[in-house]
Image (tube, rainbow, N blue to C red):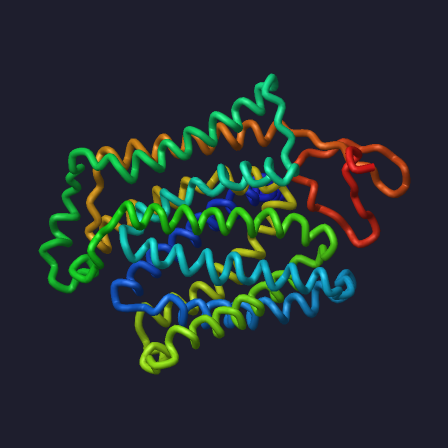
Length: 366
């Protein structure tokens, strides 16, 4: 039993990271089904983040009560901006992008997000780049390769890869594949790229915010609440004359709201926190391409999605570029000075692992 317990402890971060990818893939599949049934993405975002705030709030109240910092005006302003960037803008755009293409294409395009995050961190001087350094060269090359792979997926279709079960699904009149919107891959790629830029900006701002407000569950609750309020204002502005968009029925649209709120904005945050504490954010991000594989397989069954060789090659190029960026990022070392005047060298993945009694500050800012 003791040996089995040790094995489970070692396997825990891997199981958690894989579970996160399955949760993300499930969200992509459910959203595509809901969009095919006429889901209004603005209204769904309102319900999703309202549910997320309600689910996370009790855990935040109990678990963060001893470490919750005082709310200040700058932190409040950052929370409002965080709620606007990810829940409102990025999610609205990713839903729109998914509407114009397949779930597999949308998930694959989202793999360019780490490259944009690296570029924005570099611009904001959160990422140091030395052209002579091998790791910096890997990050720059990986960024270019990732963008090139996204362009390949968009512009190069190639021959059709025939899968036997897609033919069976195409002949099924009740299949979701009979309901999809007309595919517009270029338009979808542009929308998803803008969504990735907003998500990258969200990640950069979150890194700044969590240093001054390190209560993760409480911060998550406030972001979900801000997203719910802001998306409600936006939804009312666009859907004021469309009351039929607001009621929920027992269908995939209701499932998208519940799954997004409970799983994607509730349980997934907890799992991500556990894995990040054990292995760091680079480890979590390294599993992102797994979602694309899961979505590709499941979508071929549910939606009878067809695969083209050009898009498969483009997706493979994105993965290669992503891992080049992650390899360069994993080699980073950043020095921090703790208030007790002791010097400690920490990996970049632990920069945000601050506590209430220790405020870590980069040496180059002293």
